[in-house]
Image (cartoon, rainbow, N blue to C red; front, side, top):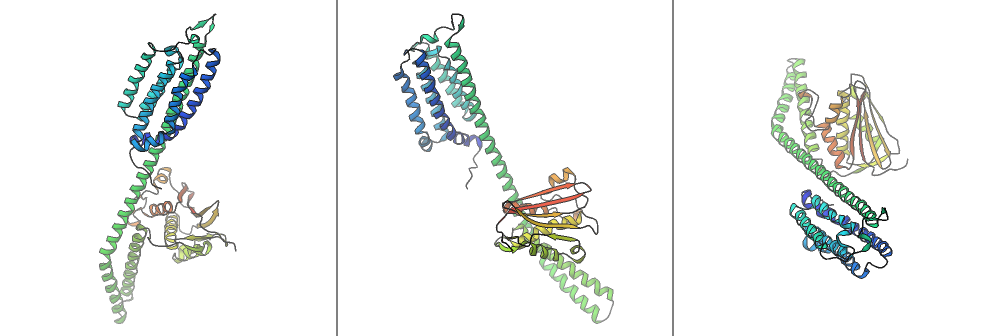
Length: 427
């Protein structure tokens, strides 16, 4: 779904217009009820034909408000309808008591909405128009006897009661308008912030992919040369029986070169998010067993896996293996030698959940808050660049899921990777 990324100040009229149209229908219904009540109390002094003209105009304008916004734009449409409302309110008051009608307080509703949503020019224009309209009522209006006195026989008059009703109505309308506008604009601002964060994250991932690809390209040749020389040195040491120690060192050099190449390949593939890898249906327990077997012997024996045998899901297998491997490696690095790392898979309410739990040193709250930030790491520089957890979070969000951490200092950490549940089959 396309999202409009224009500034909130430009989008505000478009955001406000749909529910304002609904609100105007409600106001029109309320005005009709109030006019009917007033007609009863004024003993037919109120001329319904004249009063009905402004109401009919308001109804017609509301019916065509959406079409008007399409033609002239939301901002102009909203400003125009507020101007029309001021004019119609003036006409309505002119036929129902003029300035003595307590509902003249409703002039403030249009001015308030304009001050929140529209520009300063629109607000001042509406303010001046309201002042002129209210001033006009002093010279031209049809008086109603019910509004001519503030007191009647020592009791509150209909005018004072009307002022109270008008005040309540104005206060409620302004409160609804401002709260709704604020909520709508706040939601839009939050969406903008979320999208900005997403764009920034994608830029960091793209930069990482470019960096990894460049590193792999630049380091591929020297690493290949080192590997060839180390292999020749190993063969030479073995053939001429120079020294077993020299042969072992040459073999170590080759294994470390292979490890560097694997790291570069993983960085490149993760940074590019393994574009083109398709999801494959796989049994989760078998998948976790293969994940466990991918670790060297000492760590493999310390990994406990658990998943229902009937649980299956469609996943990009290699990417999922890499991100879970990153979480398991973090768990081992936070644990003492011999401590167990627990890896589980489960499904609940349409969510596939992978759990990686250790009993290590845990994380302080300030570390936990930043654990998924790129290039943030509590390890020594030679142990990592702080990208593993960040890439796991990127993978989770791209899959429509989440990455959650729960940690207590000196008690351990639990990482929970939640993904939309794609498929489940019975045993």
